[in-house]
Image: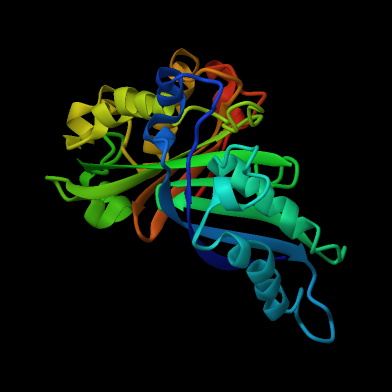
Length: 140
Length: 158
C-alpha cells in the first residue's frame, strides 16, 4: 500500500554548464540557461510504501512525513536560489532530474524503517513537466 | 533508482465513436452520446514519459526542446484542431476511442523517437486524458523496441 504526501516550495535556479559557450548552453537548456536564473513553484509528492500497522491502521504517521518533508526539503529550499544556497547545487546543475534525485536522497535517509520505505519522489517543476524517481523499475 | 521525466501537451480535436462493423442501433447502444452523428470535441492532455540515465554532465535525461519538436511535428500537427475521424489518416478504418488514440500516438513517438531525441533515453509511457475524468495509458516495455512486436507487449490501463 502507498501513501503520498505533497509539499510545495518556490525557488530559483539556472541550468548552464560554465565550461560551455552561450550557444551550446542555449541549445541544450534553452531559456533555462539565462545566466541570472529564473524561478518555479515546485510541487513535490513523496510516496511511501508499506503495510498498515494492525494496531494503528497507519503505514506511518503522516505528521512525521510532513515534518521530514518540512525539515529536509521545504525549509532548506523554499525561497532560495538553488545554485547558490542549496548543496549540492553549487556543483550539480539543478535540473528537475537532479533536484528530484537530491530530494530522493534526503528523504530516503530519513525513511529507514523497512515497513515504511520511500517508493517514489515526483517533482513538478511546472504543471506541465515532472520527474519521477522510483525504486528500480517500479511502476512499469 | 529509476528516473523518468514526463512532459504534458495539449490538443483539441473532435471525434465520433462509430464502427462500420456494427448496425446503427448497436453503435448507439455501445457508444451512447459519443455516437452522435456530427461528432464532438475534447481538450485532450497528452503526457509523454521518457526513462533513461541522467547525463552526468548536463543533469538531463533528454533535451526537452528535442522532445517538444518530436511531439509537435509528429503528433500535435496531426491532431490539433482536427476532426480525428476525417482528418487523421490512421483513423480511416480505426475507431478513435482514446485507447486507440493513445496507441497511435505511442506508435508515432516510437517510430520517430531516434530521429528527434539524442542520447540514451527511451519512451516508456503515453497517457491521454480525454476529459478530467477519463484517462488512458500505455506502458512501453523495453523489450518492445520493434514496432511489429508491440501489441502483445503493451498493456492498456483504463
